[in-house]
Image (cartoon, rainbow, N blue to C red; front, side, top):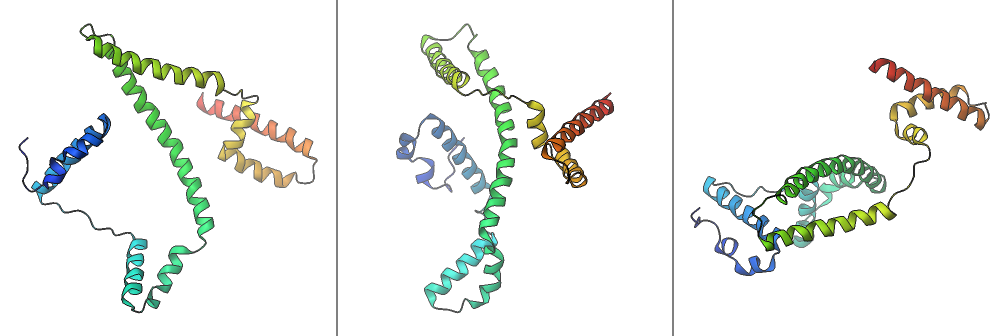
Length: 209
């Protein structure tokens, strides 16, 4: 692809940047340069920030620097910073749940790439250097996996109990039922909880059948 003169030379041909990056970084740098060239050709300008918090922050900073009145931002600031500790806790927990889904997607993508890469190991035209590069990857990853298998595994003693603790529908039903049996002893409530869980499982199996 011919070089686009509208892309700054410091971005397009910065050898110092190329030299400072590892192989993965150089690949990503190449994609960034292609995107900049396409944006320049299409006349696309960088998108200005529109986040309300940044808009308010900029207004406040400008007011501080210029000595202008910023009292008009009071309501906006209150909306943005109200109960930050509780907000932070909520956001952290929501992001943790989101990360569970990301973990599955990344694991599936990794499996796809590993199947492709390991399939390349079976090619008959690998040079000695290529074979050694694959061998290093395989050995390094095998060592990580062996360590994880040896020291990272813990036994789940009661799968049923674990699932009951993270099953939202079951927890909601249990909470409703617990109100009816609040006067019972903890031992009696535990017996009822296990019976309820077994009944719930039987119902699900019946529906699936």
